[in-house]
Length: 162
Image (cartoon, rainbow, N blue to C red):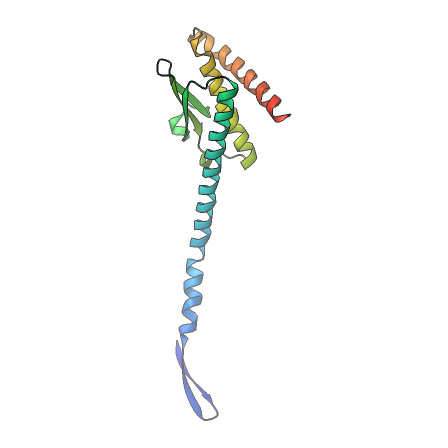
């Protein structure tokens, strides 16, 4: 885009360079928004991981599981059984356990509710670990899940009412 502009007998060549920055900006404006969403998702994930690690340490101490080496991994739904938000695998002889908690990116809840749900999962799985020395069977699994949910709910209500 160019043309001639005449002012008082002086002629200027006008080149449309000024248009290009606008076009470039208009074409690239979605990228910063995507980058911002990605940064927010990363910050959300980092905050969730930090929160879960902090709550694990608190509940591990409260439940007197200090002699266990327990870690938490964020997991996607494909890493978990259907309709679950977490699980635990342990080695009683080595006193090690890994708790998997649904990754922050896969939650559809508001942020605060997501953190509360993640804490519920951690406490729930720690109670399973507490009960791990008891006899288990497929027949008792449903009853155990019910009892673990009730105990988890009661403990968290007591903690949050402080």
